[in-house]
Length: 134
Image (cartoon, rainbow, N blue to C red; front, side):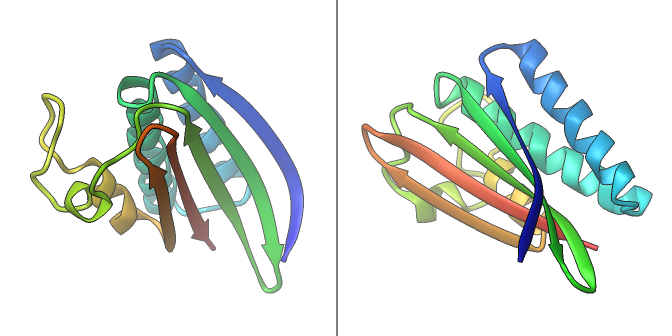
């Protein structure tokens, strides 16, 4: 697998969450993802960026454009140094929330992409990696 391009974005404000959505949409368009797949990827990115901001006390996105012939893709790596997630299995279940939302964020993001990985250490932060292929 070849990484054609990388870009890092800090996530420290609501404006940065908007920037993440715009950046992901732009690259999804460039890679000619269908409108449905663009929407899925942007929705997942928005949710994960919002999680990094609200639950992780801010963080960053590493966006990678991938090529693995005959397919190409976008990999998004969201990292924060927040309190981490004590029970990742529980956090992945629909309806579980530590905030005021519906508790569909992590599980929903997983359903919108082709590959999903989460690593979290209480007290050290969380890293969520998602990849969408076309």
